[in-house]
Length: 307
Ligand SMILES: Nc1ncnc2c1ncn2[C@@H]1O[C@H](COP(=O)(O)OP(=O)(O)OP(=O)(O)O)[C@@H](O)[C@H]1O
Image 1 (cartoon, rainbow, N blue to C red):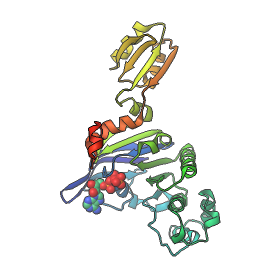
Image 2 (cartoon, helix red, strand yellow; image 1 turned 45 degrees about the horizontal axis):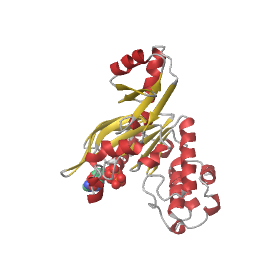
Image 3 (cartoon, rainbow, N blue to C red; image 1 turned 90 degrees about the horizontal axis):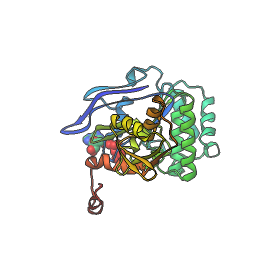
Image 4 (cartoon, protein in one colour; image 1 turned 180 degrees about the vertical axis):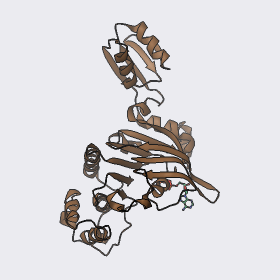
């Protein structure tokens, strides 16, 4: 588990991370999302002990990274790609990492195979494409077979086939019971990757919730419901904070997710004949909720209401 509590990082007068708190749990892919400059990399660096918090804590498995004797075997991480010795070949790069972390050398070939780099393993990293470097970085993260994995912008530079592969890999790692924490500044990358979202802006927490619930916070989101008991359901949804109106097809609820409506109906034994989210756009929700946190706004985009 990753636990961040009251985490703050200041650089001089600039506050990169501001009282941040969230938890990333095992068994699911948690997307760590925020516009450029939101503080994602700074948070990841503190989780990995590469930066000291000004205050607060960033713990992995209940401890600070540097208190873990087993390093890479406890947490695997992909930080910025390209941060490797270009003159070495991919295999040697991983062998050095394995040796210094006391990881059996056999793991090197296993992870090269796993990320699809076996054929390029003896080529110089300097000649790798950006996508190949990302794969090598992912191989390094997997080397120690760790229960917690952190990936900073892992889809950068990958072609569509590579993106699909990474998504499948993350799903599998989560299904194995690992904690998979993935940062991105693009909601479109998270849409088919993460189960759960931690969204930040200007170093502060904006959302920490399942993907479907986050989408429900966007403008224009509503859920169409058909039930033989519209009055009863309206009462339940209104009590849960939703706004409900009658439309020709049934009821239209705003301010509540389809999942929540399903749960309420189940708890109160109200029969549903249709439950359909409409206008659900994660992208719209992300734009709306982070609009005030965007560092650079272009004239055109601000005219549209979103930054
Ligand atoms: N070493 C540093 N010294 C001064 N300011 C810094 C330093 N590192 C980060 N910052 C500032 O802290 C803020 C957060 O930066 P950070 O790189 O963590 O954001 P990010 O969410 O990872 O952004 P991106 O998506 O662009 O990578 C930015 O305003 C950045 O300029």
